[in-house]
Length: 423
Image (cartoon, rainbow, N blue to C red):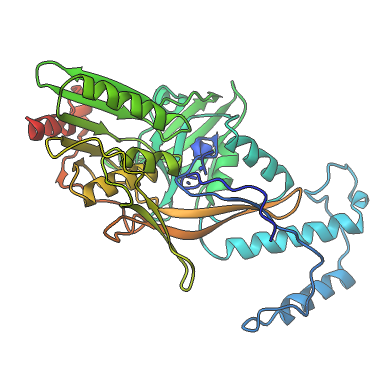
């Protein structure tokens, strides 16, 4: 294996981060943004040798099928590997390449993991464009939850939010096609698109009997990052973090400087609807509250694999006088779960809201050759106390739900509870 470049990011859903964690659908309908850790690698792939096989696997069936197809197959339909209008245009090389791609795709899909994906040439190019930050779409993060394609959160000010989509919505159809058993990256491909075009989503929502149809007009997605406010009456400083982007660690540092200058010791960190982003940003933010060397998150690999622990950089500028509440909900995923989980485990913050999304897997993104790539789930995230984020999310200390009537009347009982606890 020749490693050319390594990046830790979260597509997302993971993912599924740049952003992989599940993508702003794409996870953000066009933005590869997941709370996944993605390592960019290049593998040198040579000619397949049927004699080089895993001792525990019998490949004879595969090679028997390969031989039969080579001997018997007659092309009668135009394959997707060519843009030609005639079936005879496919060369033997094109057919063999299509068979190899199909075999890899089938193998990957057999794993049943929505965040493990094979990218043939066109999809690989699109994915790499997304993780560089160039995308258009509807602006929402998605993941697979309880075997359903689920909205983690729509971005603030995005077409998805303006259309009325909400965290927890289950997308059951995309442009009239069922999403049953759909992989994240296939959903991304179907939902994203050029600015000005529309996508129709049929959504199932808790508490609503009939499915709801949304026609969403795609646009250029502008990622929001952070807002701050100071309530002079209560003396509470609030930081609202929308994503863990490349610049969010620096913006968070500036927000903490404003908090310190306010002379307040009461802080609310609002991570509701935050789908995650860069792992390094989450670790850096946790470092402002933790001593050096303290584990922030552990990457739990397959049995016999190396365990990786991301540790605090030890900025640790706050003493025991700090009173902190972190707001979380079902739209808090990935990096949000890492940050809130770490600060909760060390007793630095009280969690208020509802259970988080539960997107805590690690993906490696690898170039197979110059044209194709593979994204593979290689580990899961564990909080400092060993709690698996993928095991159903993080349960808050104080559970507070927001009802449809609360939304209708402009009430925020989760924020109200946070203020109550700090006062």
